[in-house]
Length: 611
Image 1: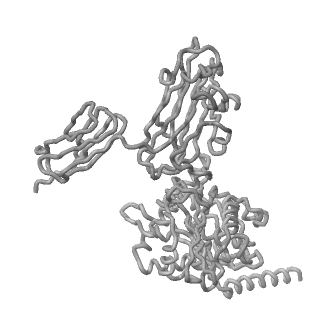
Image 2 (image 1 turned 30 degrees about the horizontal axis):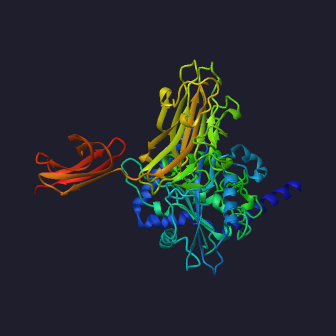
Image 3 (image 1 turned 60 degrees about the vertical axis):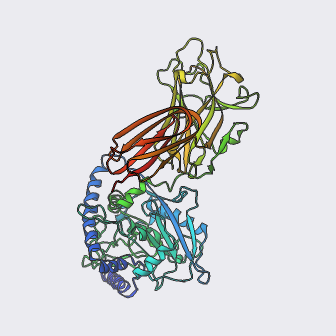
């Protein structure tokens, strides 16, 4: 009797499962539907996608081997959320609701979600921390600070996720470059759809040119299925719709492969007859002819209610990592400045005289080697400043690690700086330094810069040995007098037009003597040199008019487009002049004139045309 009851129970469960799959509408995700409609419009697009499927799985196989031999990196993806709202539809969600979704994404992708305890025992060995994280963008495409949320009013109150024209129109309302950001659009979708996404582009494959779809690349989520608060509505109020769609955006397919017992190209997700609209977080396998094992109804790429979803698999993780390295726009995200640290961007000009401790609010002091006391790093000093009174900032190098063959080093870092509208940026600062009485000089100061929080610091100028000295040798701890200072000026044209820039003053020392800085000034200089060329185009001669404010030597060089120098002239100690240059021997074409006064360089293009 017990056996019979058990059989009847199992049979009933199977019937219930079949009924759920057959009767409950499966219209949660429109990703595959919309993709198919795009494919119908463009058969070549379908061909490219199929070839990308082959590539992505080859890449996943490679990663499976490679990741056993090296420590995995964590991928960090900047996100911009475009809230397309209509007042009548009440679709303008709050920033807090947006933030709750980013938090849910990170919990789900990093396996930090508390409901991992509900993963069925047979699936726990396959549950993965995907090592993928998300941040609301802190930098917009111009490099300016942002909170990562864009609000756009539109007169339409809803959009059709099955319509390519709706898709294109929606995304044209607000868009950031999809090779720098994951674009998420939050709107009202029709017909009960919760969301859809665009799969990774297959562009860059051998023999295929594919630069399509950038302007529609991203994820769309209905406003009632986004985040965990506000308008988020049960049973889709745990942020799992977005987790599901971002999985598509990273190359994952539905676990049933969008056909009966289909292939999702992942080894460790069991076959599934179709979408599980599981209401009770329990579902038997439907592809084995009987209840031999569970469907992975709890996978984020199924259709279960949010409360039932709680895992990605290791195979899905590998597939997403393959997308992040093989798909050109996904791979480019690694270089995006979108997650660059928050803070205040200072506009040029700025001056820091170190007169109060307030500078530490947006300046940064880094005891980079961590091998000496923090009290011995860059420190405000209340005497010996440039001028008669005030503060400077100093490194107390004297007698520290004097016998150590490796210098210790400390960094003084500026706030984020905006050079976007600065044509001729200049860095000025005052420096005071003296050798001690006996030691050879092994101290140095390096000026470096970093753009948009990259890992690369580029050296602008290095001051070593004799370059640093501003006065005679001093015994013990050097404290500068007003006459012991000199001004350093560095032209930094490479930073013109850039934003989110930091400068770094790097002190390297073996303990020779103390180093002082004061009155750091970054500003836009008045151009000292200007050049005019006429007539342009020309035939046999050109006039080169040189104007500059200070009396300096000027060198003129002319290059062809191959970079070959075809002429070099010098003019000495003249405020301004006009030079007639014979171009009769020049062939027709484009040339570059380069004028330099030793500090500035001006280039002008001119043309020779004798037709």
